[in-house]
Every structure is written in C-alpha cells, then in structure tokens.
Image 1: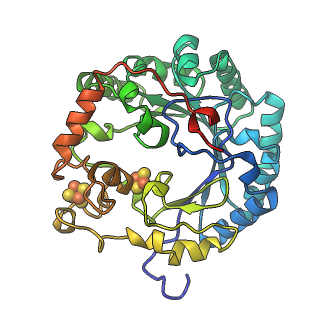
Image 2: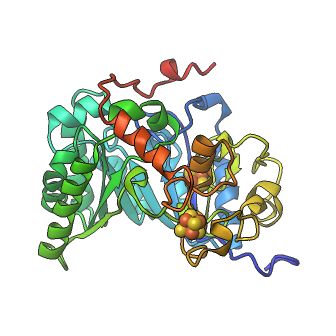
Length: 369
Ligand code: SF4
Ligand code: FES
C-alpha cells in the first residue's frame, strides 16, 4: 500500500473500454454521447502497461469492453497479457463479429469468461433494438461456440419498455444457451440511454410484472442458473451502491486512456480526469482529486450524512444526482429520502407514456468530429 493511502482499499475490477467502435447501435449504450474515434485509442503497448499496473495495484478482474472489444485486432495479445500478469479476463461482447476460430485463439491466449449481450429473445426484437439485421443469428452462433469451447457464459439482457414483457423468454434463452448466469439489466439512464429515455422507460406495472417473473424463475431454476436483477433506479425506494461506491472497488479506463470512477463521470463538470498516458494507475487511484472527491462518506450532505445506510449504498449515484439535482454531491434522487424523489418518479411516469423513436448510437448521431 502506498504511503498516506492506508484507508483507501485497492480496486478489485477494471473496466477496459478498448474502443468505442461497434457494429451495433443500441439506443441505451452506456458510452458517452461523444464517442472516441479509432485514432485516439491507446495502442497495444499502452494497454499492456495498464494491465501490468492494474495487477500491481491489486486489481483481480479485467472486463474487456467497448464499444465492441473484438474490433481490436490485438485483442488476443491483450488477453495474453492479462493472463501473464495474473488478471482474470472477462470479454464483454455483442457477439456479432467473432467466429469460432477467433474465440478459440482468445481461449488459447487465456480468456476466462464471456459476457454476451442480448437485445431480445427473437430476431425481430433483437435486431430492431440492436439496429443491425442478422445480429440475433450471429449471437446464437457465438453463444454456442463459447459453450463448445468450455468457457463460462453470462447472458446480459438489457431490459426496457420494448422487451420487458419478454423477460421470461430471455431467461429461457439463457438456459437453452448453457449460460451459468443471466443479468436482467434494466436500462440505466446515462449516456445514450439518457438521450433515449422517453423511448425506453417502462411503467411501474411492467416493472412489477417483470420482477415477479424473475422471482418465480429464481425459485424454479435454483442451482441451474443464477439470475441477477434489481429494481430499476427510477422506481426504486433506495439507490444502488453505484460502482460499489465512488473510488472504492473499480475504475474505468476509456479508449483514449482517461481513468474514471464510473462510465458517466465525465458529465460532472469541474472534475479533471487524468490519463494513463501521463500518470500511473496507482497515482490516479490514490491521489487524483476526482477519485477522492466522493470517496467514503465525508463529502455527504444530509440526509445521507446521518443515514444508517450510508455505508451500504454510499449515497447512490453521483451522476444521477447531477442529472436531476444539478449537483453531483446531492443525495441520489432514486432514494425516497431525497427531496427530488417524487420528481424523478414523475419524470419516469411521463416518459413511460411517450412514443418517441430511438436515436440509435452511432458516430453520425454522436456528432463526433
Ligand atoms: Fe442512501 Fe443517502 Fe438515501 Fe441514506 S439517504 S438511503 S445514504 S441515498
Ligand atoms: Fe457515475 Fe453512478 S454512473 S456515480
């Protein structure tokens, strides 16, 4: 442990956003609306150095993500480096651009786990949400190849108004594809999802019905499939412990090397984020102002400051507080003790009645240079 950092735990996980390039166009993507171009991406040597520094820092898991991480031709090298330095590697993929041979090479390089996104339980809904014809069939092929290669598979089912009635079918699909775990991941409204909130938000009755399906499937499938699901923020009573607490368990490295406490942190004006091109990961984790700004509980205002849950949810999500209260240090409005909780619920209920079309995630819609 570094001098003067005794109270700061080492991070457990690192989300490596290798690229923002992606063949899908999901309207809820958690990437920032201003996407990073290929020319700005860290190169192979830089990512390898980051993984070495992560392992030295105490990180155990690396989530190789994007965009679509298989868009990087050096992915095998990067996976091999993770294995070399002792990091458990999880590939987070859309599964539409990887054939079995590539997967085999990734397994040989030391890949430990695959997390595959699913936009729906059949081609029609899946391909509509993903904005790519033929995506569903490709995903099925990828899932089967992962099984044949003996890699553990998690299915990530992102849930919103257009597929929430089909949660049961998503769970059945996970089972049929041999997944060990399925994440019923209600959309979190940051990045592209915030932009598309009025076309994605479900209503309370839909949420309740979906949660009942999840509860009964959990009972029926005990020991066969792990089902992760939480009530989505806008309809919750208490907030999620976003990222396990700011600067407590994990960090994100963006395609151009910025180190963030969470994927939406750059929306918080006034925070400066260092890059791995200029500083070591350890320096950034322990000493950067941005990581220390909302770490622990000292920064908290009331009602969090005197709340019995402050070391359970760590005050919820800073980015959501900013989006609703205009103040990143406010109590997350997902908490029913926040004065803005009623407003958040009213926004959700109003959005759930809208019929807006998707703004698909793409470089063109991002207006990126
Ligand atoms: Fe969490 Fe703050 Fe709400 Fe307490 S008041 S439950 S610490 S968000
Ligand atoms: Fe930034 Fe929750 S997304 S703290």
